Image (cartoon, rainbow over all chains, first blue to last red; front, side, top):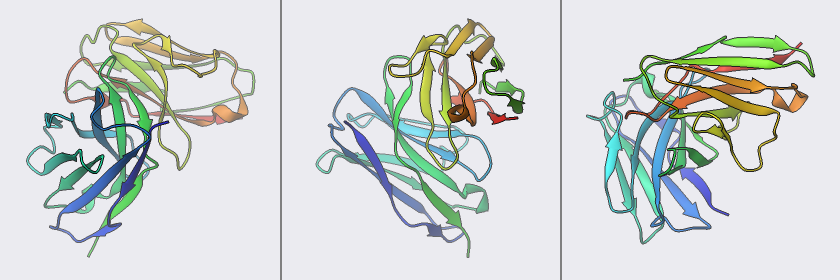
Length: 119
Length: 107
């Protein structure tokens, strides 16, 4: 079955760039799904960051759009998130997730990775 | 953005109780609503899609209903393993948005 695994630094300095990768195993990133990033600040709710299709098409949350880049590497079967100019407000657990094209459901999630923004 | 308002934000019930959570959208979203369960320290898990369809493998004590702006999620008989926070999510428009969550505890 398809599994997702996030990786990247757990600590990022303020004004720096947060970079995470999500490795897809057990299936192809070129299948008919959108590949998404969702975050959750400590003790708070879920926020959709954005998504990418294997063709390279992207959708971003307007609240983050000026700072977010999501890319796909089909040769490595993975996709990535870059969030620039981070502040303490970007401290959160970051999840990668697979989203079905029907019903826009997040049906498979990574375990999540905690990223802290601090000097 | 479409705002999703869940209520209550938390509740406490006994094993075997019927539990109901509501989710209200700031505009008509038809039936474009999903429900997730998130246990502490874990990723969310899809329970209900398209407002009322049970995801494969999810116990039948979970159900959803509603359309337009008002939606309901029900656990017909609360079990100890249902302790979690539940989120609604709309997909009528981008950006996809979630409700604030309802934390369910056992009395």
